[in-house]
Image (cartoon, rainbow, N blue to C red; front, side, top):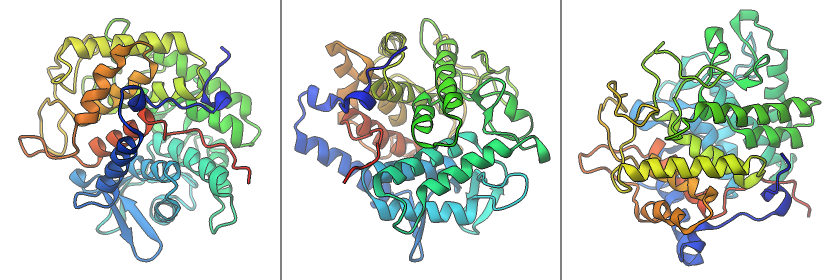
Length: 396
């Protein structure tokens, strides 16, 4: 499974450019999306005092490690060091456990009004992003500018390797399955969320964490790729939002498992691995074709945002921000366009153009999600313009 990805070549495709858009227009579009999410009237980024900031899931009135760690990834990619440092300081002060069985891990949800934790437990994808964010920051800015990014990344990883079930807290990665857990506490250690499977991030850890577990992380990357083969439907390519380690949908422990909000991230995650490492290209290209063909069959400009994995309409619709409604969601428009990175022929532009024309603004019924829609929109614009990269150590 030898890859020929951007890690080796340094080449990141700019699909917008291939679609005929000009460099200046592309740069402007990414900059505007960043402005809307981080600075505009509907921003989800809020500064606290002189040195901190958080990213808020405004419709759910909390700051969660998902959005905090996404904000840091966007900041390191776009060279916004002050934004990165502020979010990290806030995360460390309010979310990271400084002692006890969860030491080094993060409480996944904080109330930004009171700065109190809504939950002490962790969501494993937050830590996965934090570690990768910090390794990238270490590679980009070094460790002598006020924050030892590498030391902070290692603290999280070293903490993971010490967890042995004491206090019902486990490693982020289920050690037997070599797969990321849904949560590292209790029974959540025994199942997973397909959208947490980021093989590219494990490859980054194997390259830059330097903690002696390189082979384990490479094994986790390969296992994540194989897991995605099993979790994505052979016809529609849709994946459930919760699954057992064998890829089968989790039987309704909280709700019937289906392709829902978490699942939207999977095509973008697979595209990232395809571009960066290219170790599973054949399957990934086939996946992208199946996925886009399914959405095309539902109408490229009006496909809805939740499905059973066989493509049928789910009986249970998961509400978002208290609103229970299937819609043509910007977040899925964005990540389905990111899948175009894996499509070789010109059909890829069928999904790229609607994303280019999309706007981060309220839907016709007034519903608006500048947080999840906004972050996935910005991530996808970055991927498709070649601005979301594996940050290697800078040589000055």
